[in-house]
View 1 (cartoon, one colour):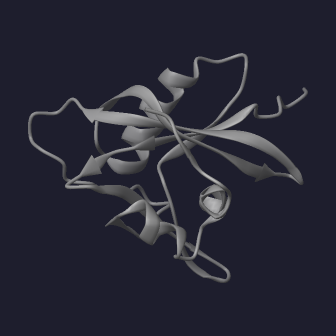
View 2 (view 1 turned 90 degrees about the horizontal axis):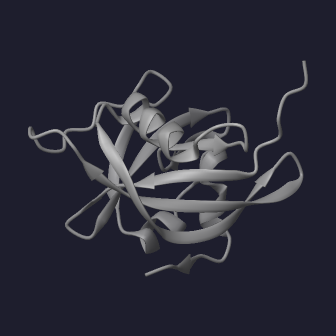
Length: 134
């Protein structure tokens, strides 16, 4: 069975008071941050994949909207696109992140501050040039 190579890293950006939700991941070199995300492949619906991954990773049910940021992400030595979609919560109960077991916590950060932090594996795109799409 051949594993399909991802065509893009697809991230979900949930904003609150001008800051975005980042998840913290403990790694061998320390704790890094990344947005909730999924690797997109052509044989699947990336928007549905993102909504499902966002719920699993954050505990927040949300819909993916427009692409708001574009960058590039290194995957196995090659660069693939990184697309960041604006997420809109569906639940009426407000925004109360409950990160899944793969994550050690969460933090609300301005994008400029997030760029200066240590990045987890799926957060490396924050070190690349980022283009706003509005």
